[in-house]
Length: 179
Image (cartoon, rainbow, N blue to C red; front, top):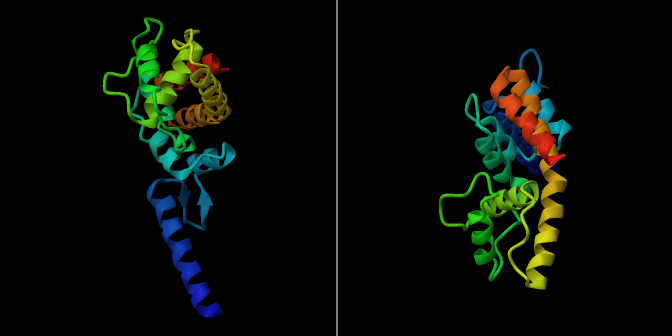
């Protein structure tokens, strides 16, 4: 019935608003409205889970921490290591031009995203002659760079609002490199 449907919709909306309030993305006084963080999330079309990660950056975050947070974004949730790719990405990780090598076993999608970004920024030659892997790398690169600009701009806006000049400067430097 329509009454049950309205009640379920009310419950869904109440839960969503509670989560937004809890993470500082909206305020409910005097009426419900976005905070600066909520505005940035909407302006750059950032997923809620990604926004939580970006807002969890420590004060005075280093470039490596910012890159790690961006690489963990929910926007990259579909990225996975494909069969036979790990060896190639391990070679990228060990390349001297990889500024922030990943110190753990490569298995998370964020590891792949970070290495794709670093390979492009470091102008690292793709270490495999396999056509399929090269093609998949180019596709991944395209998908990553479609999203990464929005994510880093959101970090910059949030850090400027927080008046964290160190993180803002490092985010701007990363944004300039990505551009």
